[in-house]
Amino acid sequence: MRTISITTLLIFSFFYALAQGSDTRQGRNEVEEQLKKFNQFYQFLNYSYVDSINNSALIEDAIKKVLSQLDPHSVYVNAEDMKGVEESFEGSFSGIGVEFNVMNDTLIVVNPVSGGPSEGVGIMPNDKIIGINGENVIGIKRNEVAKYLRGKKGSSVEIQVLRRGESEVLNFRIIRDDIPINTIDVAYEIAPNVGYIKMNRFASTTNDELIVALESLGEFESLILDLRGNGGGFLDQSIKVCENFLEENLSVVSIEGRSTPSINMKTKKDGDYLTQDIIVLIDESSASASEIVAGTIQDWDRGLIIGRRSFGKGLVQRQFKLVDGSAVRVTIARYHTPTGRAIQRPFIKGNSSDYFDALNSRFKKGYVDSINIVDSLKFKTLRAKRDVYAGGGIYPDVYVEFDTIGSTKYWASLIRKGVINEFVISYMYTHRKDILKSYKTFKSFDRKFEVTDDIIEELVALGESKDIERNTEQLEVSRSHIKMQLKAMFAYRLWSLNEYYKIRNRNDIVVIKALDILDNWDDNDITKTISGF
Image (cartoon, rainbow, N blue to C red; front, top):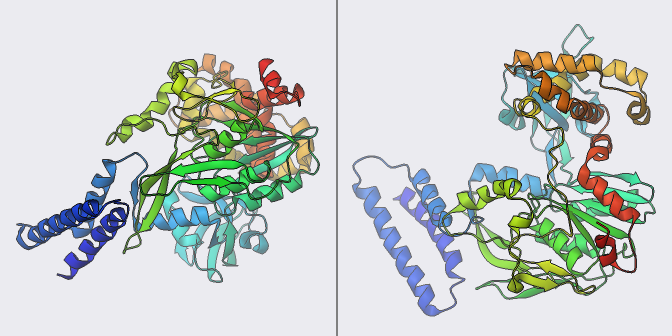
């Protein structure tokens, strides 16, 4: 009886939350009747079924099945996964503070987090962690690392390290501390008076991080805000991000739902960056909060959107915690941009696979085929009265095709099978000290270091050892791009993500297009700025 009461409560808590959205007494009564029916069935099942029943699995499957019949974004998250989700959006966790990789069954430090506990005790890049609290961790799996290295703030962990050039195992005692999970990957001056900021998601600390990043740029005339690959996150943070670039009392997003009061969320103050030219970069993986930012900047003619059509997630979820620490995220409303555009892509209830697979077809169909241009989906921006479109995602003002130059199946195989990543780690382990001795600063490295053909041959040989046969013709097509990628990855492991992007962005056709547009920006007429491209 105890098992039945707990699981019944779990189901009831979910359906009760949904029942609160029923807008009539008849609707509430219907929910209650169906709950009674389910509870009756569930008790009969437990009392009478021929074999024992795994109640936990049964209830989880039932919840998943219910949600699968609704929309693609109403989902169930089990208790274990919820811990990781909460950490990723709270903006920090407690641990020892290392970026790591697992190669050939060995846990390797890629970089200690700057200012973190590991850096403080002298952990260095390329250190091999072979023991944790006296336990041999050779053969550790990547998904097992967190349970060893993360822990309560103030707790200690003993690790044993093999270091190149040291004949004995090194022992370290590290006191765990809060480790920030940054949502701003990089911020730097990409061209004279032009700032570049890349944001990977919207978590609780995002706007605070953005303000710091903007201030770090000093005086600048233009900004490229890169939201490509940004799957969204906290709604309130998207509003705060927009607030940096807009005047007070301007609409950012409106929310409407059957059981949710209509809300028009507006900026609460004048932003500190009202005069700078703004370009927002998006692609098919930019979703939710990213689309709110891009749509708002576009609707108010505050800047231009460059790239490819965004994902098209315009549904708002509310998270309901369940009794065992798990949760359901139930769609409660749709959001609209300031012009009234609905961002959500069309979907068929109960068919989430086709919904997500549709993204793959964009690369085959191209941009024009993906736009369903009809009058009912056409809107006018609020200042320049330019045409913008609804119907699924944010359509860029300037479209840039997916870059396939230099791409080959051979290069893709080296990436997919982890050869390039493994090669970089191995190369850094052997050559890190020599490189830093020859190139004491990134500026010197960037100007003088070359990925030679001999280095490429080492990469090819590693690929062959992993059953990736050399393809001379495709290698020549990809050679210059592989060299650029390797140099950028070397720079990341020698310094930081800033240096990685400084190299990568010089060859990024979307970034190049953005810089070209900024060079020809017409402050008096944003439409003229676009017309030249």
